[in-house]
Length: 155
Image 1 (spheres, rainbow, N blue to C red):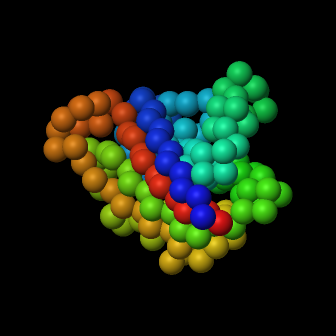
Image 2: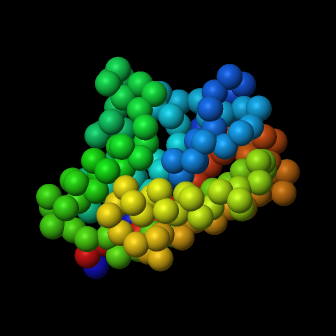
């Protein structure tokens, strides 16, 4: 059994879509990044890659490669799953937390869980997604960005 931890953060900016866990959420700002900037999926990918000692998403999907411009992070997650399977690993579970002052994410959590589970070929019961605020503190509390942490267990 191996554990992994992933973290990602992106700046919020007007004129961008807000995508978290593969769910597009109506909001006046979205996350800035080379891909769709889905911090939740990015943190999950880094946790999985870290657990398998396969590097990180910057190594596999560099932001200097135009092939990944505006990429769908769930499609990249499916590629991470394939890489893990090639190495003989199976995902046991994932626990992730999104840190955002707004918007309220509770109405979207179940779809996020299902999207991540489907991309990884596992049951939604193996994927936990939570959301919290920083009570107005830090960059997420100031509504400048959104961050996510994820931990996973693979075998």
